Amino acid sequence: MKNTISTEELERIFDEGKEDVLQYFDLSTAQRPNQFKRVNVDFPLWMVKSLDKQAQHLGVPRQALIKMWIAEKLPESKLA
Image (tube, rainbow, N blue to C red):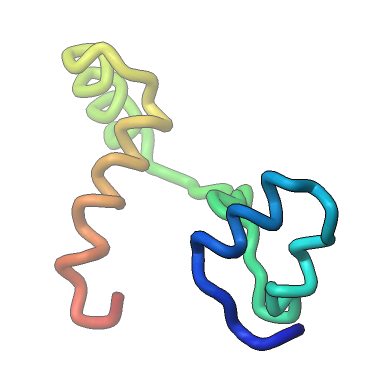
């Protein structure tokens, strides 16, 4: 990795296409955005029925409802 450069300079180098811009990035700490990890969760039947009812009311799939609720709750957690 070379010394840091300004955003404008990086954009200029990229737009010109004459130089590899990857040399300006620290790829050892790079992360893919929105990377997914599949998990399996067992819910009691009554909970699945309740989730399905709420999801239908909101017009979203069950999985989307669960993701929305978890996304709302995590920031409230002291450990997040």
